[in-house]
Length: 155
Image (tube, rainbow, N blue to C red; front, top):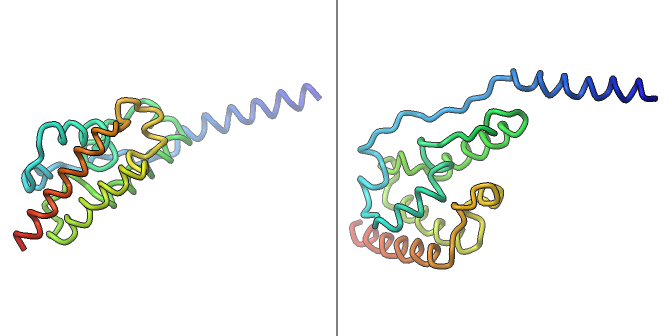
């Protein structure tokens, strides 16, 4: 029985090592500063600081890939979260959004932070500084509301 357990353990370790060689696409596409959020909307410094620490790793082309993003199978989940986040909203490509889309994104930023859905709970668990305080959420919602009004007036 011990011999079987030893072989099973060896097989598990070997499989884990083999998984590390599966290629994954951890990319940061090029950033065009003219397309960045701050080039298209006024973003107060305190709001920019919140976005930088709590949102940009998944919602921009400037992801800071931590060491564990290189360890399979965890890396696959992290890459999937980042890719999905960039599809939903990408602060690096804000210039590509029309006014209506931008208004919808701003509304969702407030809704999802209030609901505790963003930053993603698994991200906030590991990145404690990304956790939003009640004041952070209030600041984001005030900013998104004011900005949505300005965008609506500009239509």
